[in-house]
Structure formats: structure tokens, C-alpha cells
Image (cartoon, rainbow, N blue to C red):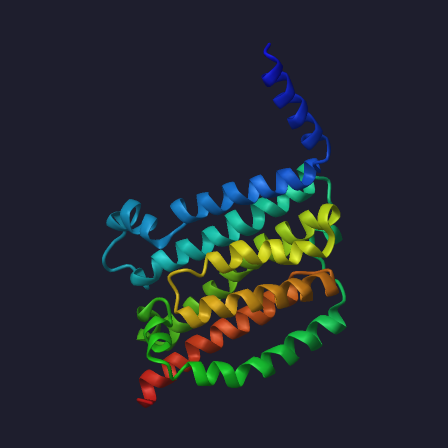
Length: 247
């Protein structure tokens, strides 16, 4: 073995000795799960692989791609990483951020932040790019029943979307890097907003920090889920009101 190779291996060993095995598992698993979700959990994947086999007369058929997408979020970004934390990493439920945590503070904070954001949501709803973007599936506004079914699935989607960032990455990395995990999870969270209106992608940076802080403060991701879901549903309701009232 050459001296150069030995030196390289020795250097790698010194670096590896300072790594947290749990943190490495969390970061690699999050990367794999997000890639799997992007490629196999999308509505486009469903349309290509499954839509041709669904009867044209099936109830709510145009919304099936959304239901698939949102279900994959719950499974790949929520359930799978939660099980990894419990069964592989040995975290208890509170350590995963999936418990109720400080529910008194959490509910008050979520309600307060929602009320603070509401005027901004109303103002943003008048922007053409926001009215064109939401709801993500225009067919959701075809009837009240379709809208309610769609929004119920949308809320389930946010369980996975919130947990992968404010549960798996945030609490999974906290033992190794402390509160810096707030900023680490904000990076992929903001990047995955690419393709949405620029104002929303920029807001995702601030939202990632706020939601990360809220999760650490309450020791639970649920209040971020509640806030994020409420904001998203409000966006859709406002967009629908613009359509109906012609604002």
C-alpha cells in the first residue's frame, strides 16, 4: 500500500471517528426518502403508471393523482422515517417529536402565528401567480364534496411533509448538532419549494426556521403541521373565493 493511500485512509479514519452514526443514518435516509418521493411519489408518476387503468367514470377520478401524491408523502416522508427512528435508531416517541409535547404553548403559538400570517395570505391571494397556482388541482373546486375530499387529503399530506423536516431531520440531528438542526432542515425544505411562485419559495426560508423553532420549543412537530395545514387550506379557500366572487 502506497504511503499516499495510507495517509488518505488515516485522514478518513480521523474524520469518521468524529461522526455521529445516528446523524449519518438520518441524513442519508432523508436523502434517499426524498429522492424516492420525488421520483415515485408524484402525481406525474401516478398518471403514467396507474391512471390508464382507472375507469373514466370513477368518482373524483381527476383527483386520484393528488390522492396518490399526498398518500406517498404520508408514507415515505412520515411513516417510514418515524419507524426508522423508533426501530433502528431506538428513539422513544417523545424523542421523535411525534408526541403532544408542550400542547398549551403549541396551540397558542400555532393560533397566534396563523392570525399573524392571515393578512399576508389575504394580500398574497390577489397576486395573479398565487391565484393561478392554487388549489394545486383546479378540479378540486368542481364541487363542495370534491373540495372537502381534496382538502382532507391535503392535510394528511402535510403530516409527512412536516415530519421529514421538523421530526426526522430536526430531532434526528439534534443530539449531534443541537439547535443548528433548525437551519439544516430548512435547506432542503426551501429547495423543495422550487417551481412555486418566487415569493412563496423565499417565504419558505423564514417558515422553515419558524416551524423548526416551534417544533424544538414544544418538542413536537404537530403544531407546525397544524399551522402549515391551516395556511395551505386557507390559501385554497381564498383562491376559490376569487374564482367564485371574481375578485
